[in-house]
Length: 173
Image (cartoon, rainbow, N blue to C red; front, side):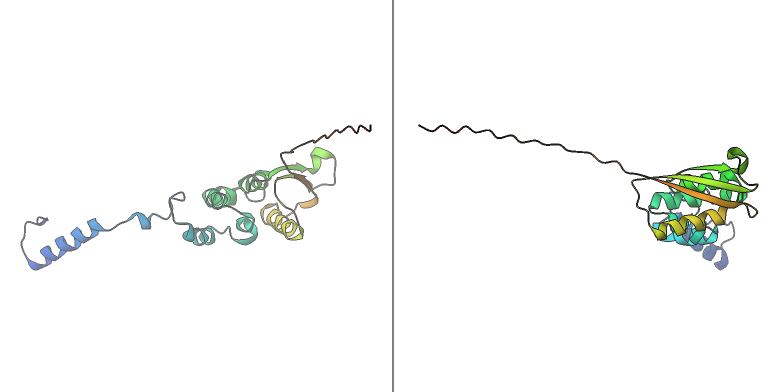
């Protein structure tokens, strides 16, 4: 590499050699905010940095794509935390089709709401229910109360039918 400085002294040559080394470095590993390209092992650290670990969404993620999508949308989720939009959006990110109905839409008590969730081809148990309740509590408005959580378990399966018929005839002479 040629000398970048017109002065030919030791410190200039040292700077030129150091600069040449920096040009050879792979800097892609430093681009951690390119969420689609970052290594999967760094996702948990990004989730911690963006404050979405545990009940705030990370515990409900089952795939790498859901984790990346949650990190991408974390700033927007924090901006609208405590709103109906935040609840619906976090359920969408986790692959749950949820509908939030507020008290004035169904004639309930003030500041109560209901959530109806379609769980397509997913299991549901006490642990999943607790995770959903914690997720809702973390993203709902502080003054609002969850009146009911309605879960629709939807499973699709291919049904196979088969039939078999045998006939015989007995002749006696």
